[in-house]
Image (tube, rainbow, N blue to C red; front, side, top):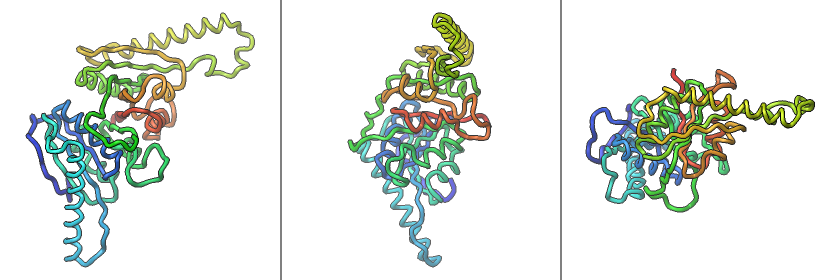
Length: 318
């Protein structure tokens, strides 16, 4: 990383291990992101970089300026160490190499995206210290999820209870599948994660119900029995589509996989009907439909805003 002060803190891991980058700012949501990243790093025997991005507070002459930057960088690194101490005390998670880093820049999103090439997974909290209270999703998490070319995990907001490493109580994984390339990439990521975590995986294919997907007057002349038959055919078609998508898309060995077809709105189904606080939700950055120029699809944005558990967004191929 350019203009970065790094410090490595724990035992080394195998070469080629997964690399995780988490950015913190001292907020409770950042602590949750750090706890999730620490747990993930331990599961994968990964290299974890804990990054604190800071802005210079002072404008001074060249000599005073250098001293000021050194002081601010030292304060940023101290903040990282304090966050680690709050979560781990003197005992760092085994099987993970933890590196602390401080970088001066134009903000957290800029710092993360400038150094995303050093990570296989980026972890951010849903909101940091900045922004407007009451918003469910901060600008940093949204920008990173939109522009990163590696998967991004966004951890949910929490209450005032202090965060611990045991807060990650993921009991299942749900992945949204619609046949788009990004959703199949999300499926493969979710399969690998379910295998590492030893939790069941549910692949969800959401289709529009005929009763809600067309104007009411289109069914005036259709008998209820006929409509029920059409609904059953739509469900069968959706099931066949999901089965076809799952076949050969990934290696499911050692994974308890369940495929579900559900009629409804994709975002609502994934965030309320299929996933809860103990579920890790995995979605592609864009699915079928919408505007091709958008970096994040509307379903993905809604999942980031409303999911009750952590969300992982896998990027499109670029």
